[in-house]
Amino acid sequence: MEQPKISEIRGMVVIADIPPGYTVSGNEMVLVGEDKLVGEVVRIFRRGDRVRVYIQVYEDTTGLMVGEPVYLTGKPLTVELGPGILNNFFDGIQRPLEIIKKVSGIFIRRGVQAKPLDRSRKRDVEIKVKEGDKIGPGSVIAEVPETSRIKHLIMVPPNYPEGTVKRVAGDGKYTIEDVIVTYEANGKEYELKLYHRRPVRRARPFLKRYPSEMPLITGQRVLDTFFPLAKGGTAASPGGFGTGKTVLQHQLAKRSDADVVVMVACGERGNEATEVVETFPELVDPRTGKPLMERTVLIVNTSNMPVAAREASIYTGVTIAEYYRDMGYDVLLLADSTSRRAEALREISSRLEEMPGEEGFPAYLASRLAQFYERAGRVQTLSGRVGSVSIVGAVSPQGSDFSEPVTQNTLKVVKVFRALSKKLAERRHYPAVDRLMSYSLYVDALKPYYRKIAPDYPEIRDEAMKILELEAELMDIVKIVGKDALSEPQKAILATGRLIREGFLQQNAFHEIDSYCPLEKQYRILKTIMTFYHEALRYIKAGGRVDNLERSEVYGRILRLKFVENERVAQEAQAIINELRKMVESIVASARASLSSLSVFVHV
Image 1 (tube, one colour):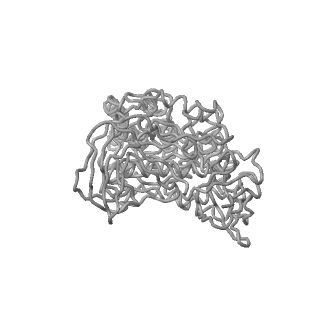
Image 2 (image 1 turned 180 degrees about the horizontal axis):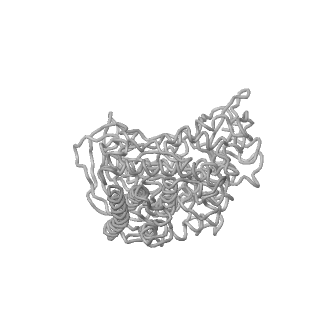
Image 3 (image 1 turned 135 degrees about the horizontal axis):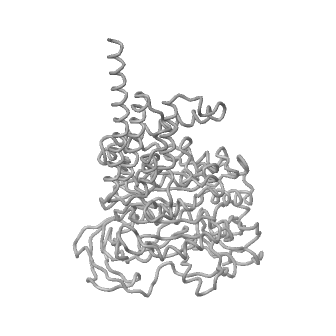
């Protein structure tokens, strides 16, 4: 039979003629050329008695020649799911970078292949079923301690039928290629191993989707208190160059209370990706004291790698995230950045000669973004467990222009918008989240949870947001007429706004104490600041001036409250509030005495 061959090459897109006798389908994985470069069928049409296909190649096509063979695999682009994913580094199509480095050196050689999961390592396996048990999609058949923190559940793949267990291997050590359970369904036997393969573009099924009621705690005050993300929710962090997107993503990976973190470096600069690969294995999880990589998987596709693999890396990451979600874990997927994935779509679309949309992006940009973000959610899995996938995508709009297509189409599908401000970054205010442009649609749904921390937490948060809005309006007036033209209550708003900005919102990612702030401490700090505001209004009514409060020691102690140890913050906050009230009471008492003396004088 005649072999399919390359007929045309357009950069990352290769056109191949498929002779009669072959069957090819959309999104089928193929191997291109003598080097067997990995590719995916993205378009099919017929020309005479032959079928012509467009193939999106995930590797460098330099040196590829017309006439070289194309090998059909008959299956879509898939990833391997099983023990060994965590504490590992992969490229966009799940090739293990550590193994490839040993084979090809520091640069990935064309056509190099390696199995994603270690075939030789034997793992401790505890079988959870016995002969005669009924099992079906999502049923847990075994447990493997993947790391000291994560217990890996071996499940029946979602596309397998229900059946009866026939043979079971005993507890012991097995490689991922060993058959541990054999079951019969519809007169056919199925062999189950420690791993299975899953198409990356097909979302894993589940039984039920739950509403968002639990926040993803990050330890970042501006995120947790003002713009929270629910577990199973979606968020976007757009910002120009230098606004701290990558550092913020790293903080979420290190500090969030997710059970598993999947980081996708989609088109990242090589030096930043290298920093992640070198530093993350050395980091310690602050919650467990164990290595952070024990709950982390990194998917790295740097800017000098083939652009086609950028899109694949996004789907690879979310497929792995869904896999751990089905085990009942809360998974956080960090994508940095989705703009570079959109740029890859634009480049591929142009080579496919598709009609361009706004700014040259393909017309289906919005639907591709939605396909990715809509795979988030907190769900009841096929096994009955409850797990979640939360997605946080960084967006890199050119020139910090939030009106460009990627940012605008992302806003249509996410529920948390954390705009990163160039002006705040220039003033060294980090995280540089613009408090006036950003928003979260989960605030109302999460209020019951925050009331468990403190009954008045939501009201204090809302009042603080109102103060920030009023401060922004007053600052425009101050630029024109100066601060002296303001009334004392207005000056109190400015003084309180400064406390919120510098004493609460600003946070040092490299400070031993300030790097992570628990919700209880966040409440104590904000409660103290808002107490200052109300006491300042009492102080003003008694004839005091806000300038005196700003110059007081109490004001400085409030600014420094974020650096107080977590176990001491409640005591220190109460001491500040007591001292503040004492100051105000003294001037109020003085004012009452003066008023009383005046009344006596008038009476006489």
